[in-house]
Length: 347
Image (cartoon, rainbow, N blue to C red; front, side, top):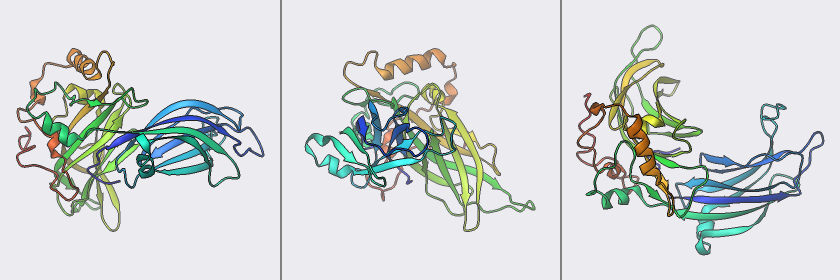
């Protein structure tokens, strides 16, 4: 998983049905389908005792690379939830090249596929790709507009409701300072740190900085948000050398705090690891909005944040504009523009 991940678009998938799935020698066939693009996976509900299940369920998968990303469809046997085994066995799978979908008229396809790695089975589904506006261009176009309140960024327009996604977490991992790292025998070690960013089952890792107790990462990533009220971001500062790995410490931040504006260039103490130090983060959420949505998602969560927020101005900064311009147009460009993120309150 690489740094500076930006979503280019998403695939709307409708899983219609399957037919002639391979049966079981013992027990019932209880299938469900999982769709995966990169580390973003979604699955249908399981069906009980059938080799010809009908779903008619809609799922959404985010796409970061329209040239190389693949959509992997796997049919699983629902054994873990039934208390039978510790792992769900795969019944069959099929891989779609997303570039081929984009090359089709309207980036749209409906049909059936024959499962691989099994004796029999077909799946009927529909796929539709929808592009998302670029956060960089959006930030440039809106640079002169009034700042959005709290931790809610500019909304992301989509054509209609997106199943299983309500927002995109827009995350800047800026830097870590004061890493104090000791190994056995109380001998201080030189860290080679990187940061893993986790939300649900998604994970993105920054690059590793060699031999630095005050590493600067200045990296931007995006993660899918499904439920602002319960989900939490975790930032793990880790060390890796040729011989071993260590978790230096981590920070867990509820998405409700992000919406409230508590993570706008804030330092956080590392906890429960083998080192001490602080990490500087900036996070916003960009809500998905579509025509006819009432009330608009951004306005709704901002009002909720206003109702819940404490009167504490210390978590805000005056130089917080044009934050999205931190994302480079090219992977080899500098990920941080001059003058950005220079005035956190804890230097």
